[in-house]
Each structure stands twice: as C-alpha cells, then as structure tokens.
Image 1: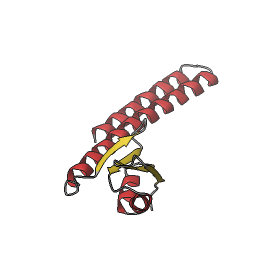
Image 2: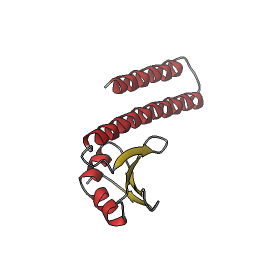
Image 3: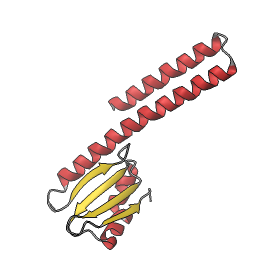
Length: 133
C-alpha cells in the first residue's frame, strides 16, 4: 500500500513540474521531453513496486508450500517477472500443468510473465509463458 502512495505522489509531483514548466513558456519540445521523462520515471517506480509485490508473493508461496520441502520458489529478472520453481521431480509435463493451472493463473495475476521449472537432479530447465486466464 505504501508503494502505491509513493507512486501516486511521484506522479503528482512530476505532473506539477510538467505543468509549471509548460506555463512558464518553455518550448513544446522541452515540454514533451519533460513529460516523457516524467512518464518514464513513473513507470520505473511502478516496476520496482510491482517487483517487490511479486517477491513478497513468492515468499508467502514458499511459506505455505512447507508441506512439500522438495520444491522451492524464487524470482528472476530485472523486475522479478520470472517465477522459478525448483524441484527434483520437475519435467515438461509438470511445468506445463503448473503454468496452465492455478499456480500459473495466480502468478500471472501478480504480474509474472513466465514460469521456469528447474530440475535439481538433472539440471533441466523448462520455460513456460503464463498469462491471466
């Protein structure tokens, strides 16, 4: 919740700067550049906040999955957009089932774009894209 407030405050401040610079007679090109910079800054802050939310979601997933100690969960990617599932039993079929099932839907809902299943015994990696269903 704090992340949303921070993002909203940052966007308001940046919009105020853009409005003030536009009102003070800056050229259209300078205003456009400032406006684009403000949008890019807001997107960056939102990406960091979303990444933190995904990391917290994976931590809660790991804590609730204690009944299966052979499976671990983590994240990868610049903005933690890849869910990593490590298990000695991981194979292509189980990874597809995870990506297309409840885990994939829940992960996509918090912003993950891919599930990578990694077999700890063989070293095999199965990458599956996910999306909201």
